[in-house]
Image (cartoon, rainbow, N blue to C red):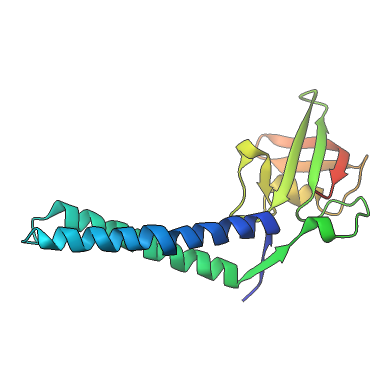
Length: 158
């Protein structure tokens, strides 16, 4: 199976969530199931069914995170050679002439993407247009509404 790139911060966030699920939420739901069983008939016990549903969600999320971490290629962008090129994990400041404004994005793994936080997926059209380019290059992004051009103003390895 191919390794999936993830930033060091993203991997740490997943590991923290995994720890929370295993050490806090799983024991709490097990306790809730035990308490609901004590109330008698399980067929009509809404607390029991809700707790079992939550347990299923927690176990599924644990397996999902463990699979992602086992296939992850953790990249610490601060250790990469800063040659000014846009690569996975870099933070890029772009200038859009059409919108007359600067936009800042960090290129991250698919699970870390959050456009509101300025994090775009490595597989997004914008990121694919930027990879390998340098400051002062113009990247053309193919969008459904037409091509958009962005000039690369700065590339940071932070």
